[in-house]
Length: 249
Image (cartoon, rainbow, N blue to C red; front, top):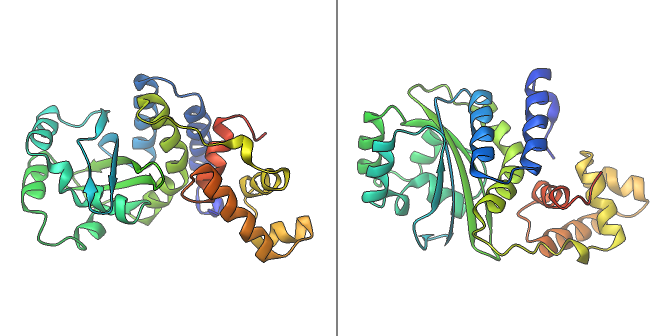
């Protein structure tokens, strides 16, 4: 789990507030409000998010995009040229979901960037940080991006999005209604629900094993079952799903 000590008191307050607001996010305007607050947290000039279906080879169809303040002319270019099918940030989120600094991702996709980078530089959005998730069972991906003109996006902003992504993922799916979501929260056993509670409290598998007086291997087995039942990408995503359904205090 994330080490929250790496965040300042003010950052932690804002992060927890965004998570709380994400639980009640129901409309696009609510989501834009979240994007704007996160944009401030990661020092971005622009913010945007999207949801789509795909696999490791790419998206199956154009994504549904909710824009905070990206230049409309850029979005028209991006859409008209179908750049979402070749965008390295999108492709990496499908292949290796998680938060990413754009420069690091671009270095992995050298040779695919000419059209994208030439266009984005004209609008001052060639640097950025993104967070996202991919649910393999439903083949649904979400991506939240924040960009600007300077190279000020570092590991710290990446870590902020790592914490927020599971909750933003759930909020975006809820708003867009692109997926008939049934996380099957009622299929969890009492033991599994108890383990999720301790995961939410930030306990490691070893710490949970001590608390529950079971082996660490048994805890790991339960966690894997929880993630499978909820179609969760990781433990943090499982917690976000359970919180959304009011199953965690």
